[in-house]
Amino acid sequence: MSALLRKLERFGPLDRDERAAIERLCDNVVHCRPDDEVGRGGPAGTVPVVLNGFAFRARLLSDGRRQIQRLFIPGDLCRHIDGFLLPQSDDTLQALTAATVAMIPGASLAGLLEGQPRIARAFRAQSVVADAIQDEWVTSLGRRTAYERMAHLFCETFLRLRGAGLSDHNHCELPLTQTDLGDIAGLSTVHVNRVLQQLRRDGLIMLRGSSLTIPDVAQLLKAADLDPSYLQIEALPDPAGQPSDRASAA
Amino acid sequence: MSALLRKLERFGPLDRDERAAIERLCDNVVHCRPDDEVGRGGPAGTVPVVLNGFAFRARLLSDGRRQIQRLFIPGDLCRHIDGFLLPQSDDTLQALTAATVAMIPGASLAGLLEGQPRIARAFRAQSVVADAIQDEWVTSLGRRTAYERMAHLFCETFLRLRGAGLSDHNHCELPLTQTDLGDIAGLSTVHVNRVLQQLRRDGLIMLRGSSLTIPDVAQLLKAADLDPSYLQIEALPDPAGQPSDRASAA
DNA sequence: CGCCTTGTTGAATACTGTCAATACACGTGG
DNA sequence: CCACGTGTATTGACAGTATTCAACAAGGCG
Image (tube, rainbow over all chains, first blue to last red; front, side, top):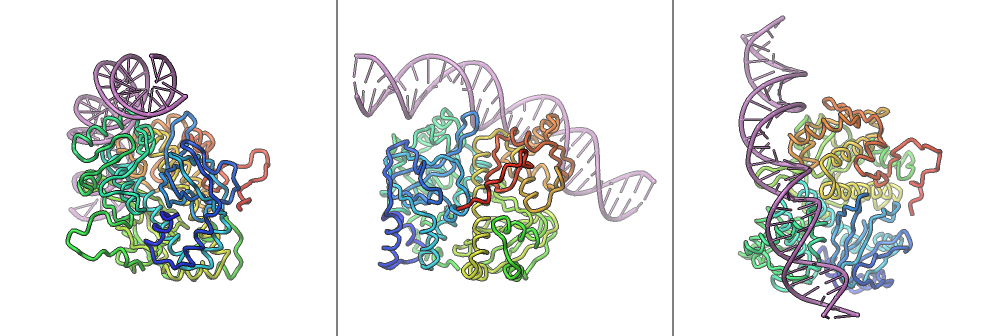
C-alpha cells in the first residue's frame, strides 16, 4: 500500500481522507506466487495495482518469442488508468515474485478520479510518467545497443524502485532471470549473459541473483546515454544544492 | 478537423454541441511546412493535435542516432492527454508534410473533459488505443524481425489511416522516406531498402514514393504476426457478417 | 544424492549495419 | 531544352553484432 501512496504523493500532497479513499479502493487484493498469472478470469473492467512484489506484462508471438512490455514494481498500475473503457487485450500479466495485487474496479477508480481532483491529478500524472517510460523503451529497443539497453534497464528500474522507497543506497532487488532480462531488452539469453559480464568488468554493476548494486549511477546513466528526467525522480543526490525544477509542473 | 471528430466518434456518438465544443478547442492552429518543428516556443502546457498532414515525435541520442517514437496522422494528439501536468520532454515534434496543427491549451482540454463525460470518454478511449499502439511497437522492436516490423508498420499505419477516413480501398499515402522508415523500425536505411524489396517481391506491398498499396491486408497481417484488434478498427471487411464486438466496451 | 533451474562458455551462423559508389527523380537556373 | 544540384533509392562488399546450438557448471531443493 505505502508504495502506491508514496508514488502518488510525489505529484502532490494528499490528506488523511484522500489516502483513506485510495486505501479503500484497494480492499480487494489477490495474493500471487511467483509465475502466477494475475487476474486471470477476474471481472473485465478491472485495473490491477501491484501493492507488493514484482510483476510484468508480456506478449507472445505465434512461434513462442516473448516480449515483456512492462515491468511492474510496487505501486504500479498494471493497466491503463482508463483501460476499462475498452476490451482488455489478451497479454499475460504475471507475477515475478510473491506479490499482492489489488484488483480495482474500473468504475470505482473512475468515480474516485471524478470526485477528487487531487487524487485524479496524482493518478494521471503517474500515468504520464508510465507513458514516458514506454517511449524511452521504444527508443532503447530501436536505437540503443545491447550494452546500452541493459544499462538503461538497470538505471531505470533502480531509480523507479528508489522512487517507491525500495532501494537502499546504491542497491536494490531485481528478481529477473537472464531470460527475463532478454525478453525485456529484446535480446537472447546468451547475449544478455555476455553483456552482463561486460558491464561487470566495466565496474558499472554488481549483480548476483536478484541483488543489484550500482556503484555509480551517474556513470551507468552515461553508459546508457540516458537522461533520467522522464522518470520524475531525483536521479542523483543534488550535487550543488541547486533547486529541483520537478515541482514546477503547469 | 473531421479526422479528429471521426476518430473520437468511433468510441461513442457525439451530438452537435459536443462537436462544436471540440471544434472550439481547436481554434488556435498553426500551419507547418514539411520538416518544420511544431510548437517550438509555444506555451508549455499545450497539447498539439494534428488536424491535417503527418507528423512525428523523435528522440535523438547523443551521437546522432534517431528514433521516431510515434507517428501522428490527422486526428492524433501529439502529447499525452494529461501531459500538461508535468514538464514537457525535449523530444522534437516535427511535420512530415504540410500540416495544420491545433495547439490546445491543456487547461481548456482538462476543463472540457471534466464537464463533458461523453467527450471525455472518447478522448480517453483514444488515448488507451495510443497506448496499445506503443506497446505493440515495443513488441515489434524487441522481438519481430526487420521483415515483420516493416509489415507491421505498413499494416498498422494503413489501418489507422482507414480509421481516420484517409484510405482508399487498399491504398493510402505514407509520406516517409526510407530513412524515416528506418528510424521508426530501428533499422538502417540500407536494410530498409532490402526489406522493402523483399516485401515487394513477396507481393505484400506496392510502395512508390509516398503511395502505399496493400493488395491483401490479411496476408500482410500474417507476415507481421500481428493481431490488429488493439487498434479498435475493423481490419477486414466482415467476412461472414458476424457482429463486431468492438462496441461492447465496459 | 540427483534433478531442475539458472548461469556460463565456445563455435558456427545469420542478421543487420557501415561504407562507398551509383542510379534516379525532380526542380532550378542557364 | 539541357546541365546541374539535391535528396532519395539502390547496390555490392565487408564488418560487426547478436542468435543459435550444444555443452557444461553452479546452486537450490526434495
